Image (cartoon, rainbow, N blue to C red; front, top):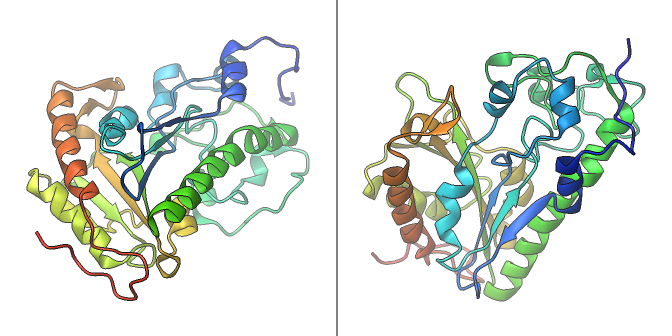
Length: 302
């Protein structure tokens, strides 16, 4: 039996809320720093029809989230930087993917836009509309409609990036530069570091930006590595243009530090980790090593 999109007149208050407000921007009273923070994967509002069509229960679906990352990075607003938050969940749509990263085998019908059939993320089931959650578990019982893909991209993906692009443009116009921090968490693993910084091997940000973040988190006792195993995703690739005075850095926080990954609940160390992350972010935001018009950035004096 073919699976089709829910009828438009089916009442789903969660989906209606998401369509009305797919993203939220937490803004400071006045932006005082050239930083823009974005959390594309911490949304936790699940449309009823989506849950019904899934072979997974609510907790299993939530294991794809960068759960509580929005709370860990919330202090940046009081420090003078805006924070963009996706309200839709990652399992429903992943805003940190290119719009062509779609798995055509997931859909019944021809998709009405270009598709990147060579993407390794699509082959892994982790395209813009994911096929799997953590550990490769399949999400859907049956195929989706091509119309479903179109609506998700139109209603959620495009608004997310429209808001982020506007924040970047406004910040660069105001300060001469913009530094985009893409906020994520990563599944724990044996010998995993606490923090992974991804600057696409130096292509998305000048080394001084990455070094400032590395020092800020290390001062709070976190074990920090660069670009392994996460070098940055679509957001850092799309917005990181150091030659155009826009730098992008992905920050991944080990989930084992602050949460119960199986239950998707805050852990006993959540308050402590949030405090230490806030202190690191305060140091990072104080960074003044990249100035407008410089061809070679410098590190601010300690």
